[in-house]
Image 1 (cartoon, rainbow, N blue to C red):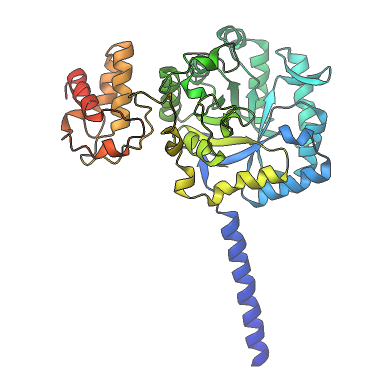
Image 2: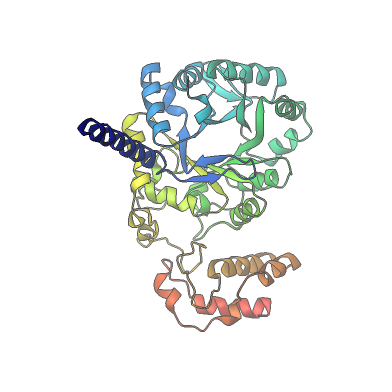
Length: 405
């Protein structure tokens, strides 16, 4: 009998340990990757750091990432060392990782560069598969289209035919594109054949004007108070049409938003606040984080245990001297409204109507809302929660005048 008790106790201990490990593994949250049918971790791996370490360190870093529940990696770098290190690190666990690999990114003269030459792209893609020790990748990402001219050259091109052929052959399962230009990304979203968009999004870049590229001269010197209308349209369109956005430059590009000296907004945010900002948008599937070493990975994985207070980016936004100046940024911190009015959406539609004129499409979107601005009682509860000091009751009055209810 005593022996049976010992066996039962040991079994219970094993179950408890297993449950603890399962709990640890599943503490990661997962989101749909648009309409692909894939579920991806909220935070994911950027490939840049794998160029700087050896295969043993790559394996250690990948093992920690996988064991923590990260299941998505962006592989833009065509450097043979980067690709080989990732392939080595994924040995035996390839089926646990969803790979977003770039097509048209090749390694030439000691650096990775973009190409639209089919033969160059083919050689680069086949090299990637070989070094990853796989016969396919889940997302074939067309590497960078940052101008309207680049998008137009892509449409109907032999390069695009090659991408479609890769999907037909099963070497890629889904087609994506990377861009830093909101106008181009919106055109891609509306093309009907793009399933995933890798886009540069963060608290600063969302204030760029129109199709500005972040590193264009003077672009970051003329930020708007609120989110750019083109980006609003892009994010809304992707959410409505179930097109996934995988976020690059989450921390501002090289972590610029984490330091007051380098932050374009003049204040420093934490990684948790930057991630929370992007994940607040329904169109976002995952935030891709550049990871150079184990310490950076451990810091990023703090996201799994971060409190709501640690994720609250508005606590820093309140410090900005150049904050929204009364303009709504659609952050939803005004919610919940006692009357059920979706305040941020009402303000967004109102801003669009004032910018573009009231169109039948905007009126239809407004009419479809569960509650309307005319139901506002001016109770003022939303005012205490708004980090940007927006006069919300006045905005509701204006929306009622514009939309008729």
